[in-house]
Amino acid sequence: MKIKDLNKLLSYMAYKIFQPLVVLFLRNSIPYQTASDWLKRIYIDTAFDNKEFRINQDKKQTKTRVSILTGLSRVEIDRILKIEKPLEVTEQKWNRATKVLSAWCNDPDYLNKGKPSFLPIYGKKSFSTLVEKYSGGATMRSVLDELVFVKSAEITDQKVKLIRQDYIHKPDEQKLVNLEMFGMYTGELLNTLVFNDTEPDYTKKRYQKIAFNRKVSNAHIQEAKDFIYKEADKLIFSVDNKLTELNEKSKTKDTSLVGIGAYYFEENNHENN
Image 1 (cartoon, rainbow, N blue to C red):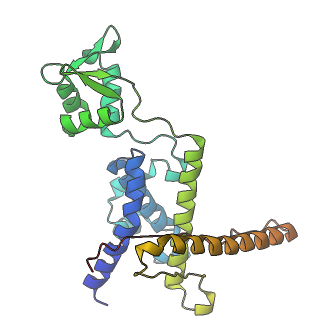
Image 2: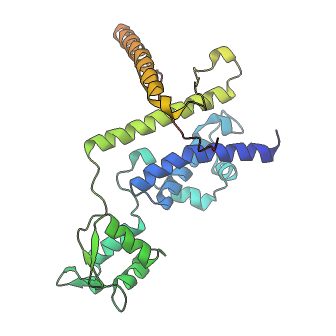
């Protein structure tokens, strides 16, 4: 396969993988810079820790080798390594709208008796100058529309009023659990794909199958869903019972995470027949 064709396939794969992740990131107010630093950290950690990418697998990886593999400078590698690993992150980098909110509540130029002022949209010490000073290059209108949309600010008589200082509500416990599970589902599927990609022995490849049909009539979608859900539940319950049985038999601390994932997917073909 030509390098050009391989790159096209990898770019398609990356788009399909990253697109739903970006939806989650934007939904939870994660800006590009934060996600970019996460990805850089993963590149660096993988290049350091995975023996596959070492010239001599018995020796530690060098920073020079990591720089060559990742395309990141040694200076950038040092910067990223000082950032907490994504799994250890407790505070995200603020996005541009949040920086503006923070400045509105702290910069004396935009306070009145210690409280955020009603700001004219344009003019000296206005919402426009606040955004220009603190947003990192975002337009005034984009920041204003965003703050109004999330109900952090409102416009009254051509003045902008702060409604609340936070950009979004803190996620509740169930949302945190859901996001953790999203990461587990996706990560374990990709780990299986990566493992199978390099395992030459077919008998040692991990179970990886998919069943789909591109031409299911929309009139029969619900019937398909009901059948898939019912049969998948039978399988999952059976596997769960077996794994529980094996766990109860276990008398050792030498254990591994094993399991199988199942998920339903549906995409409209948008075809004109």
